[in-house]
Length: 128
Image (tube, rainbow, N blue to C red; front, side, top):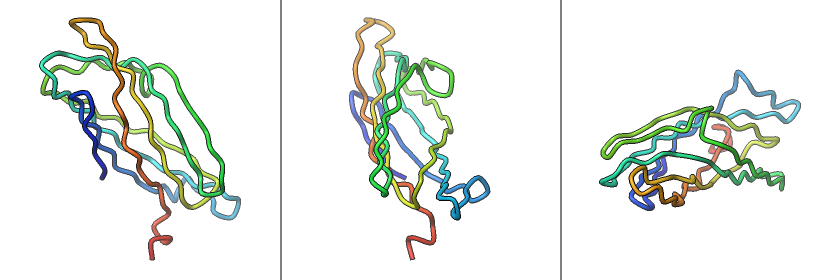
């Protein structure tokens, strides 16, 4: 697991290779990731948008951005956390992602950026 604190928000990421949704023979590798967002601020926040940078070890780079995460724009109270699962497909056995969440202070309505730490996605046998 990797974690990073920025702007009073802790982002933690765990990754999981999904062999049942992968097909190495055709270069399809599926990974799931679980993200926990903890609000350490004295005010509630709302996650408005996300922007991902995805790097595949075959040299491919992608960017994905959009509203919210998994179809919602969660509100997170002070001291509370929000957790979700999502996934990423790669064309090789290794890659990494990092990104940004665009958040809003629910009291002042000011927006700010929270950094999502870089995390690796690696087929387990590659680690041997």
